[in-house]
Amino acid sequence: MQYASKITGIGSHFPQRVMTNQDLARELAAKGIETNDEWIVERTGIRERRISEPGNPKETNSSLALVAATRALEMAGKTVDDIDQILFATCSPDSLVPTSACWLQTKLGAKRAWALDINAACSGFVYGLAIADTFIRTGQVKTSLVIGSEVLNPMVNWDDRGSCILFGDGSGAAIVERTEAANPRRILSTHLHTDGSLWEVLYVPAGGSARPLTAELIEQKANTMHMKGKEIFKVAVKTLTDFAVTALETNGLTIKDLDWFVPHQANLRIIEAVAKRLDFPMDKVLVNIDRHGNTSAATVPTALDEAVRAGKVKPGQTVLMDVFGAGLTYGAVLARW
Ligand SMILES: CC(C)(COP(=O)(O)OP(=O)(O)OC[C@H]1O[C@@H](n2cnc3c(N)ncnc32)[C@H](O)[C@@H]1OP(=O)(O)O)[C@@H](O)C(=O)NCCC(=O)NCCS
Image 1: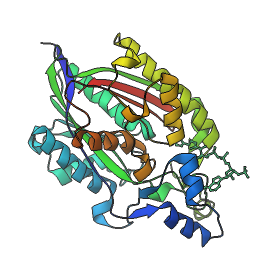
Image 2 (image 1 turned 90 degrees about the horizontal axis):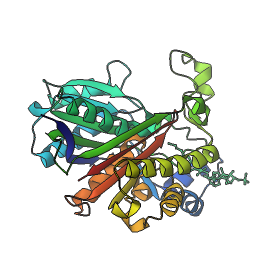
Image 3 (image 1 turned 30 degrees about the vertical axis):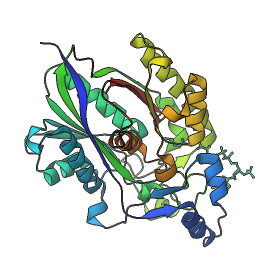
Image 4 (image 1 turned 60 degrees about the vertical axis):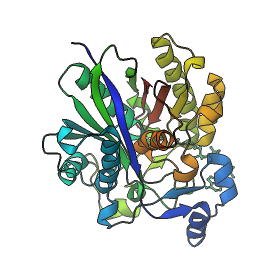
């Protein structure tokens, strides 16, 4: 028997606190840093984001994922006992040891599942789907829970107006199940690529084993994200476009065959530039960056969840997920819903 994989359930969840651009501008102004709603909306498309409350056990990364996963399971008509594998994509785990996947496994009570974290930064969810698809196609796994979830708040430099405006917290989950290879409704292809030479455009200088934290490094904010926005912008537009073309061509399809485009939500101007290059209409692009900012590994599953639950994405439609992230990492998944 030849197998394929299929997304059968999707879910999302966000922390309670909404931080509008005005709220953020007020907080920065108190520190003598100037920004405003108009600049942020014009340069990024972001109007507000959700921020997890530090110390709130309901708003840790794995706790947000618990709610998203429960919603995805409900949609798929599955229970925790059906899960064979948990792939938790995040660059902001609850703790390094144990992983967020382990925390989620015990919170869910998914006793049969083996679980691990994947860190491909913003590309993590797509990497997770590709790994789940491979395990399922080789017959080793029947049902996989793939999470893309972040609590970036502690990694954001809230004194850097060039980056802190972008990020938000949130969680998305997908149930990926075995189906027959002949099923037209399946994951059609997955595409992954990494270029580690571009590490410097987005990185956290300290806090890993190569540069353990000291009080001095924390004082210097070396435990927060350092970003070269303009450099990332250019690479992102090119790679998102290239990966979309590759994914479609691999399947003998053209852009006219695509029903929904789900790009990583890092900046609305990046998304618009890619849609223009692909000659794809913006009303068929799933966008949630206006309300959530860049939630890293969570952007694609949360945007998809909203659209599926709103009845936009319908059975049999062709959906392209297309991402880039720190590393740099890139990836795409083409699926027939
Ligand atoms: C970060 C980003 C929004 C900056 O937008 P930009 O148009 O490139 O803006 P610049 O950095 O060139 O800054 C333009 C001006 O606005 C200022 N500025 C920067 N942030 C500002 C803010 N929050 N409010 C007001 N002004 C700001 C800059 O100081 C600069 O002023 P100057 O011309 O007097 O020097 C944009 O480059 C971006 O989104 N890049 C991609 C980042 C990304 O995808 N990261 C995640 C990867 S997964």
